Length: 119
Image (tube, rainbow, N blue to C red):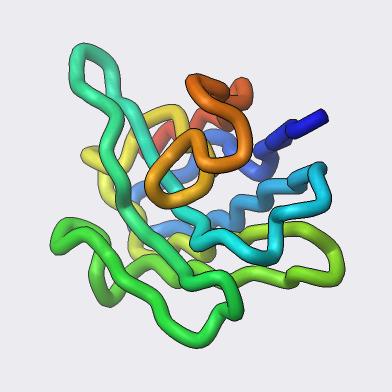
């Protein structure tokens, strides 16, 4: 059974930091690229960061480049997103999934974790 459990969100002031974690289940986790996605109110879900299956290469959306860092630990089946210099426009529900999404289980998304950046 595939499952993604995101955690680490919360309320943070502008300029602050958070570290998100995504614990995955399923035996095929380590063979897929993984991504962190976010969905802000009234907007479509977007990919903000991705990491290759082995963790050796990463890519970021322009809006988070230089501020966010994605990493993974295949032994722990966990993906991380370190978010620094947070801005109000980073406020969203953050999800992890394969890249492209649904490779482990079509149409499946976890519950996500809410990040709110506000003073």
